[in-house]
Image 1: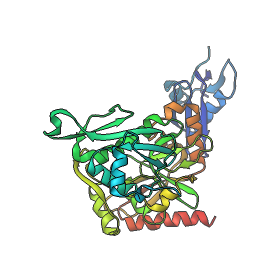
Image 2: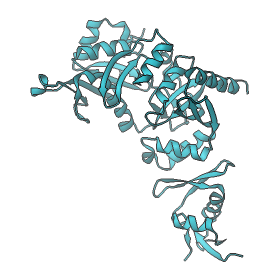
Image 3: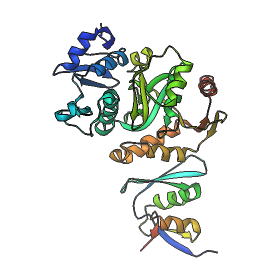
Length: 77
Length: 308
């Protein structure tokens, strides 16, 4: 099993999905609108919606790594 | 009774255009005062804006002017200068391009200054109360398709600018002269020989440009907004059969963002508006070569929506 990591959204964000393979994410702080996979959108929704300063525990995966690389997720401190 | 530009005779139209106040013209939610001493501009305005109201006592949203350049340019390669509120935002163009310059300048006034609306670079038409939004870059065949649909029973809201009202997400009409380029002019003229093209100018940055007046019914109903119905990204492909392919809403939203003039001005509200718009719309890509097939296909789309 992949190692768990606790992740937070460094900026507040909104996720919209329409039960289609792609979702969009909006980052109000930067005004950036990003196209992501539905799975990535669901991950972001979980983290963005948790309101937990300690972040959400997620398994390390290419999906989470891509979101970390895009700056949409970051390791919780 | 409301006076329309076409009610003025040529002398009266020229006189208004030469006056300090200009000729007020209602175009959708705006009243624009147009000033120009140039006879060929006067002729084009009188013909292409003939269906538009010219309100006498309303507040003007912006005053635009197109006139000949001064100095030696009066004799050597004369130029046309566009001004808004007395200031020239662009470089001058050759004098024979004065009317297209006026139209491009008016577009600029709307998308650069009218941030009460979220504005997309898109043609918009309407059937059965639903707006068909055609966002696309130049060269996609958007203008030709828009012109053909506007002449085939669809109500023209705009061939260039989609104005989205933030309070309810509806599309506001801003019908103005329809601009076509290069081969599109002959394609439309061949299919609708009664259409009168004006102000045909060659050697512009876009090639040959000509305009025709928007249908009278479109101008007369320019206070009637439309709810989002379809977002279609058109693409002219020589030899292709007309074909609509569903496009995911997320992708459609990103396309709309890329075609928005002032999305960044609206921030989160802009995202919410475009999210609602794609939620309420059927979204497609569209390839076509033959206008007849395109008209039939869009007719079927509207009919299908009517029968639901």
